[in-house]
Length: 325
Image (cartoon, rainbow, N blue to C red; front, side, top):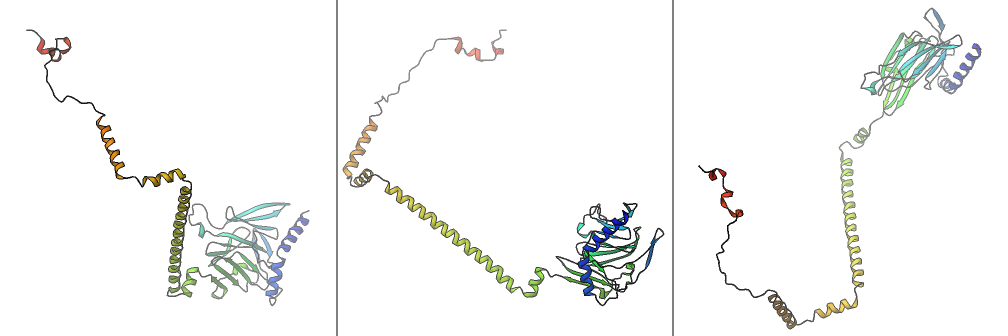
């Protein structure tokens, strides 16, 4: 049963990487087919390196009863061993610390992992730089390389050439290390082994095409004036539309007026001045008749009032003065 499981897993792994392997061999046909091999030990176990090709990012790799899995939750590489028909995690390698970090754009996140014999290789990337590490099954770091650019996949051909590549919105990155002879711990970054193409920003493209900024100035001023002209046309047409609506409403109201009212309005224009004089005289007489004739003689008469307790002044004075001594 254990052998059958191994063959099934190995078959799936080979099927997923067939296209990348074939492309790599076409591109590197001159490489020697008998790549070197080297021994590494961890806990008394020694296994031979078997070169293989992989240029597609993968989160799980398997070889020689050792699994390496990318844990994106804890940002780790989990090393798992297949023993006694079961999987057991034997180690966990932290790629980059996440807790308490505020610069998450610069945190290295694992992108791809592979197992080559007794060595585990993975690449991690942040916003503008990459990290490559080679581990033992015990989690010991054999090699570490940091370089600018974004890398998310890598491959290793039998001729001893290691290639890592990646692409993001900032540009393209290609890293090549040769003459490894099966030992991934010898991966090194030389001046000739790294190529990084940074995509120019829009501001840089505009600065290259228009060094003095004349085109940008003309374009921006033209846009402003075109928008102002467009708004002026809209406001003018809107005002004309409102005026037309008001005229139509006035015409409808005039058409709805009765002929009697029109005749009365026309006859009021022909009234003579005698009529106005008569109307004014009538109004004056009417106002004079509203009031009766009144006697304008004013007489002052003394009125004697009888004494009552209500108008006694000593009730209004302080009681101190009313005490008899």
